Amino acid sequence: MADNARPVTRVIASQPASAGTMPVRRALPDRERRAVGPWVFLDHFGPFRVAPGDEGVGPHPHAGIETVTYLLDGVNEHRDSAGHEGVVTAGGAQWMTAGRGIVHAERPLADGTGEVIQHGIQLWTSLPRALKMAPPRYQRLEAADIAEKRLPGATLRVVGGEVAGARGPAETLMPAFVAHVAVDPGAAISLDVAACFEAAAYVIAGEGAFGPEGVAASTGELVVFADEGGPLDARNAGPGRLDLMVIGGEPAEGPLVFHGPFVMNSVEQARAADIAYRTGRMGSLA
Image (tube, rainbow, N blue to C red; front, side):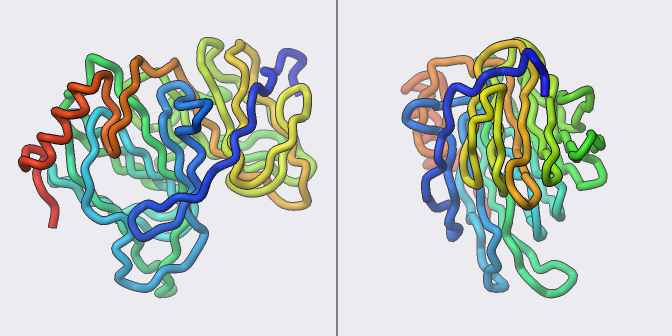
């Protein structure tokens, strides 16, 4: 553990919510913390089995953000109104830039055994002011594409940005990082990230002690670190593996106006996005 590790400022308990037909744990936004860096939304879904043909999250719009779905287990299909399609398996990610507006849908598919499993994390980033109206795009990141680095007692998988010297394959539109860390029982990690970045760690599974104080957090809790320049420290305090989703980056450009699936910088922008969706200018998806 590092002598200059960042202190922990808050532990946020995720709250039950729903996304389409899926029950989820929602850690962001929180009443006291709306964003960590540019990350404004974090849902944890599963693990659970669903019936074959379950629609998952049916067609719905987004604007002003990027959505990132990191799959921990199962198979996930993405479709959107810009014509993008993609399927990823466990360890892969779907990274969609909504920009000026898009309609998309995601659903689970059967794996090689015929089971339909759902387990993953969905995140949103707020786009910078200059890119709120950018054209939509889509990045399909297979499990083999994700940057993987073995640390003493842990495995680090970086989807986007840079963590502990490993750089993820996603093309990010803002200074940010997102990574999955699996910490072995009894092991500890110290992750270097950019000194100017906000940072947090969501506990996917297990029990951990975080920061120099050893603040306790377990499954479903988001650990928010101080906005200071030290590394992110965590120790596995439980009998099983500790799985974390580590996120952060430069603070989101505000003000942030949340209007359902739209995150804009003004009420006028949010209303314009809603009108664009309702009048069909974001396209449609059967």
